[in-house]
Every structure is written in C-alpha cells, then in structure tokens.
Picture 1 (cartoon, helix red, strand yellow):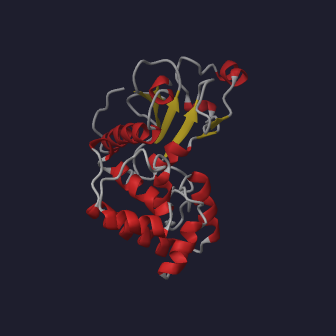
Picture 2 (cartoon, helix red, strand yellow):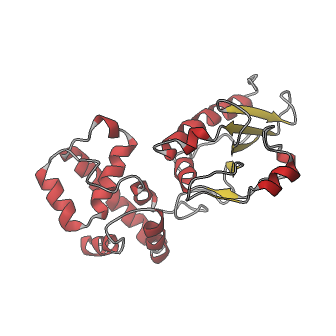
Picture 3 (tube, helix red, strand yellow):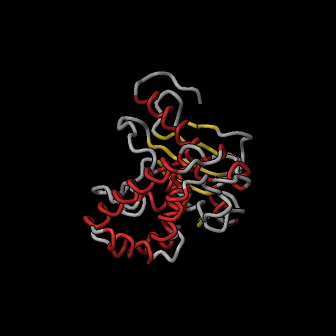
Length: 251
C-alpha cells in the first residue's frame, strides 16, 4: 500500500476514528489491504510518540489512542504535528474511541473489526435496566421476571441474554491467549454484589462455567469503560488459568 493510498483511506474516516468510521473502512479493505494499513498505522503511531510527549493521564495504551486520533485527522495534520514535536493535548484530539484504528487488521478466523474469535472466550451480558447509549441488550423487566436473574447472579443454565458493548469488544481484543482447558467464562453486568465477584457453576468443586458479576455503577460511572473491562478481564483470565491448572479457586 503506497502512502497516497494509505492517506486516502484515512481521509475516508472524515477526520475521526471511531467504531462506525473504522468499521466502514474495514468493509472496504481486502485482508491484504487491512494488514498493510494496520502495519502503516503502527509505524506512524510509534513515530509520533517518539517525537511527542503525552501527559501522565494518557501514558500506556491511551498514548497510542492519542496518536491514532492524530493520524485520523489526515496527512497534513499528522505531518505538522510530528514536525512540531510538541506534547499531545488530549483536549485537542478525538481520542476516546480512536483505539478502533489500532485493531483494523483481521486475524485468521476472527472478527475483522476487533480481532475477536467467532466464539468469544468470554460471553458478555448486560443484565440491568440502565445502560450506556452504545450498549445493546435484550434485558428488560420481562426477562428479569422470567429468569429470576435480577439480584441472584445469572445461572448459565438459562442461556445468555443477547447483549453487546463496543468497549467490551475492544478490551477483549487485548486478551488473545486464554487457557483452553478452563471452564466457559462469562462477564455479566448486574446488581447483586458491591464489587466484581466470580461465581462458579454448577459447583465450586467441578465448575463448568465462571460468571464474573460486575456491579453496574462500576461501568455506568466509568470515564473509560475499555480500561475497566480490560482490568476485569485480566482478573478473569488469571482465575481461568488457575482453574485450568487444577489449583483451588476462591468463589
């Protein structure tokens, strides 16, 4: 992919990288084009972060989000920012969803937009009547009444209630090395506990499912849900490895 072709694709984002604009871009790219595009993004991000500092509030992964937002603004803006070498001001750039631009390349057998396997290692459910605007869930008063899930934990025997959260997808894409021998893992946002709590089904001795119940305020009040989900998934991954290794687990 030539630089001209790359920046033409960037221009199609309309100046902002988010779930919608990047998904539209991915649909227009072949697998080879997506891989080449992603490689170029990675190079430009590294180049910009070598030249420009970021504030302490945006170190780590979010520094790359800031750099991706600069790329999304177009070639002229990117090159001017790179040449200036000044610290990147988060107030200037639409960075909070720009991580989508960092995960464009498809992985074989996985979702092209987020690098998720066709059958995700962790199922997601939003079992609360209040949710962020971009969360979709089939959970409502009728579902709560039928399943009896509200306040007691989602028994996997009921089957998952369909739900999706782009922030969860982006966090899950960071975790690619789940143990294969672990029980089926679930993350459920619902009332019932004051802090994230794993429950093992059908029993602690021989669990077939692990459900991490997350209190809704933890995500409803979060400044950055991706980072909260990432932290939760890190803990769930550790528990999965413990269970896969046959070690006792706290429930």
